[in-house]
Amino acid sequence: MSAQPAIATSGLSKDYGSGRGLFGLDLEVEQGEVFGFLGPNGAGKSTTIRLLLDLIKPTSGSARVLGLDTANQSLAIRRRVGFLPGDLALYPKLTGRAVLDYLGQLRGRVDRRLRDSLAERFDADLDRPVRQLSTGNRQKLGLIQAFMHEPELLILDEPIAGLDPLVQQSFHALLGEVSAQGRTVFLSSHTLSEVERVTHRLAILRRGRLVVVDSLENLRKIAIQRIEIEFSEPVDANEFRALPGVTKAHAEGRTVTVGFEGSADAVVKTAAAHQVRAIRPREDDLEDIFLRYYRERPE
Amino acid sequence: MSWPTTKLTLRLRLPATISAAVGLIAVMAAVGALFPTVGHTIGKINVPKGVSNLLGGGDYGTITGWFRSEIGAIYGPLVIGALAITGATATTAGEEEDRILALVLAHPIRGSRLIAAKAAAIAAVVLIIAFATWTGLLVGVALGGGGITIANMAALAVQLAFFGFATGAVAIALGAGTGRRSLATGVAAAVAIVGWLINSFAPLVGALTWLKYLSPYYYYAGRDPLTRGVDVAGVIVLGVVSLLLTALGVVTIERRDLRA
Image (cartoon, rainbow over all chains, first blue to last red; front, side, top):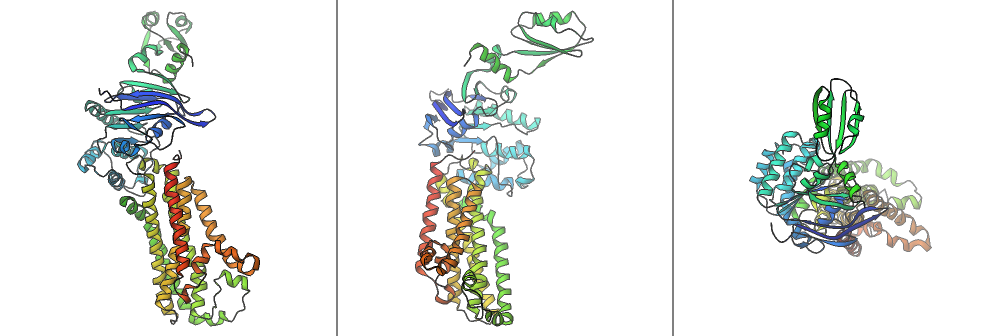
């Protein structure tokens, strides 16, 4: 880890009125980190990214990226950053190759071999016009342009949107390599599942305000876990509601879904009194983490 | 300036530009070919002054008046204005509304350089159309039996180019300055059309004659380039206005938020 953060914001705000925007963001992302930036739609994630890239000006506060001031040194920042927007749009009439050529020329120095190897890795079609490509194939072009100049910092907004599982796997492997090389990844998403496999730490943003910054491990400790238990016969959910740690339980047909904190021991032992056909873990829901966190530390 | 941006913008505008240029030459050839047959007959029709002014105030009975009315007054500025305005708007506000500009500006290029490069491409589009106009005039006038000097035909093309620069620059200023496609298109088109109406009707009302000086149309065709050659003062006015408006777009994009 370097002493100088890859991203540092101080009271960064962008007020769009009516409570929309970003308010007083204080955030530090260390170099070499894969940092998840989570929040529901409209939480202020894209606004933060646009501020970091100086595409919009802050109402107040400041930000430094790779040690450089976003207000005065944005050009130097953009030279060292790779960016994938959440609402990626490319020139529809041009082929993927022409788009990448142009964006590479704007950077001045892009190794075509690296670009082509990324295209091969993502199985991207560079010879068809963008308008003929599916969302996933356009997203591949977005990823290639973000990675092709080997940036020190990658700012990726909803990067796996539309990608098939195989390409997602390639993408996650690439993130691992990038991180191993000491480069930084700032990964914005509204779904926990998109970032949990790769992030070291994550921040949760809600209604323009930072709710928490912590490691995934620590966040999971306060998260509500949920399991689905399928029985041979219908079982009364009340049997589980009274158990220690259980926050909610409901039955639907022969399946009972139980939400609980801490150990699953009591839940499993109670279930074992019946004939169990299957136990399925449910993904921790981002909203559950929000709710749990709000209960402990209300705004 | 960013040469890759100029090249790309020109590449994206070229199909429409080439089509318009070919169409322009074909129409002018047809207009020229019609003159020997119908020009003298139409020339005898007594047209009200207001209508005559709308059509460039030309005498249909002469080849100069014929081309001034058919091409100089309406078709030429319509084609060059439409291409300049749609091109300038599409490459600035259009790309911003389509969310392409946010990705491009995340690259190491200043907004000002980007807009200047795009303006240069639109200027090239205008020059292609102006050259096509000159070519079309050469063909059309030859088919019409001659009677306009090559230099004066070039003068109309030059005046037309500066008219195209000015209308395109209005769209650049508003497109880059606001990021709103409909606003940029609407205002630039209004400037061209209202300018045409003002230039045609203001001279008919003594107290409003001065209004013609506000019209880009006056500086384009007010001194009849097909007869008198290049109007240097008109070209300078249109050139300066074009540069100032382009500079406005170049400066404002740096100072405002990119639209979401």
